[in-house]
Length: 275
Image (cartoon, rainbow, N blue to C red; front, top):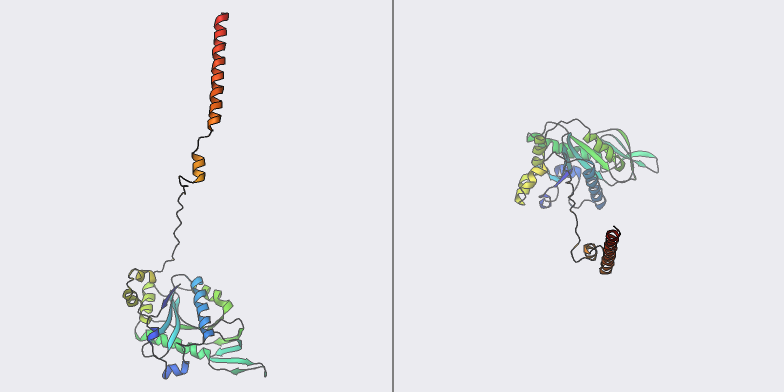
């Protein structure tokens, strides 16, 4: 999976009014636990999804006074992702978001309503793309509860909800889902949400444009192993370069050869004399 950061995110002014009041201030300055939960999600999805999927971070929609934390785009669809580090026992039914009260052992509505929050952000992205003719399908809202201490009772909620141990299942559903968008449409959605082409060109990295929208998996190049030769002055090399016999051994062999020659000559002389 490829991750694209919004280069203009830090330039945005604080949130106020309209949708921002409904959703609450999401960034910058969001709670540290939620920020850590988001980093955990991005790291996990980067391992689980292939490079056909592109994750956009901190999307700012013109005319909307709220920052969309994560938008995932791929051949199987578009998804608005939201993470939370809350813990406790919850119940999600339709647009209702309730938490179990330990004293009364009953569910009560709790704020913020994460289902309403993620649904509104998803609808904002969907409307933005529809108005620009970039999208003809639904942007699916997905809520991730990254704290192992969070438990949810699901009753047809208006958003898909996953705990940390459900990330593999979510990724598998995307990888095995029906292909409904081509490379061109994925690219059009990405550029409509974050001007990645102009951002890359501004950084002088034109070669990254094609790579950003590449639908192929990056394959590791096989390593080329070159034979290593020891230096000539190395002790091992000098030992190997030596003759197989020492000078004394060579002298002994010479003497032995001379003795053999003398014996052979003597033998020939005796044979000739006896004839």
